[in-house]
Length: 125
Image (cartoon, rainbow, N blue to C red; front, side, top):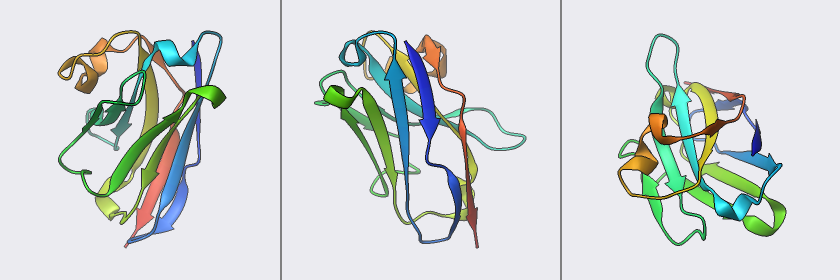
C-alpha cells in the first residue's frame, strides 16, 4: 500500500490542523493506520493509531484529549485531527500502515511496514 500524507502547515498555538493520509494500491481497510512524528534532533515517536474497522484507538499521553484519529475506509483515507496545538507539537508527521493490530504493536514504529513521506507541522508561540 502507498501512503500520501498532507495537510501540514504553520499554525499559532491553540489552533487546529487536520492531517490526511491517502492510501492506494491495496485495500485500505485491511491495514491498521498509525501516526508518528519526529522533531529535529529527536527520535520518531508514536502519536495515535486506529484499527482496521476504526473500533480501537490508541493515543500517546501527550496528545490525548487534543488529537483525534479517524479513518474513512470508503475513501481509503485516514485523518489526524489536531486541536489545541502547542509549540512542542512541531514536527514532521508521518502516517504508516500495518496489516495486524495489537495495542502494544500499534504504538511501535518498528511494527509498521508502510510509511508515507511526512508532512511538516509548525506551531508558533
